[in-house]
Length: 461
Ligand code: F0G
Image (cartoon, rainbow, N blue to C red):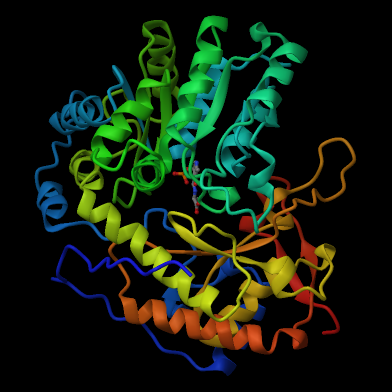
């Protein structure tokens, strides 16, 4: 058993937002109306909202003060220059193209770099990222190490790329048909699992001489840097900021959903070092997002973002942030609840295949578990399994991912240790009566990113 690290929050609370308590009968009705899809619940009917850490974090007083300094000029807002300067300082990339959020950056990058028929290797897919690659005519191939697909493997860097798998695809497709490697830190779909510095370096050293770009999905790279500090020999005495800079030096740029690491409710960007790519991207951003000095954000949003970037890399902040996730995960492990190990950076992932072992994957065990957790206690989680994986392009059948998970995602600086205790108790109660659970049947399925809007019914009524 790991010894618990102390992680008390490096802040005190100045403003509070009341939350509603509901009854089981109310929640049973609400989840039925939401088609057993937690994305379709009303936020005000949720007690503890662990749907996502995206855009749900609490801003600091310094960020809120920055909101009053928004320069809402159409062109050349000073807040854009603050943001650009923060990205250059903290990540080290030369050029910054602002976008409204992460998928805006993915869209622009995919359109600029991918030609029909191209192959994009990456360390496990992310929903929006893969879809933009496909819409641009590319094909995503997964080159993450096998351990990432095993919820029981204790590998400390389950986000790593398997260099042999990557070399295989380079041989197969030819470097000219691989526009870039799609390389994410703290891999979301694997359970928030980090990549080692050695792996970042090795992938870059392999790709650079071949002219293949390495593009990070840097959405949770600050959390990744923290794991390197904690787990990789030689990094204990380095700050998270120093580690992050070194990570970025093994890449040609990144897409970023600032709604995670950067502690803002909205925002993102595409960054790169290459001048030609930048010219293409600024041209594209005016078509799809907005002028290249706001990209869909208000000036005040860019100021909050500029400040959030700098706060995100404070060691005491990130230690408390990841520490809180670990606190919840440890509580569940102590009671024998099956979760993905090691505990990830942004979330605790329940292993629905073992939790609801009696439900086959075509009855959507993770979707059912997320719905049951809401009914049990008003805690809202998210399915990350067969519903999120979508359908196979060729056969039309469901993709059946090895990982069938429910994500308890912790917003940054929002909930207290008592909220984590309540959450753990609810999950444990549900685990004790797991054999009573019934599966679901899908009754409505949208064509893209179906997990957001699909509707279900309980089997047997
Ligand atoms: N990349 C990763 C790794 C993400 O987790 C997300 C969003 C995106 C890209 C897209 O960014 O939402 O700003 O357009 N993840 C959210 C989540 C939705 O809940 O994990 P976006």
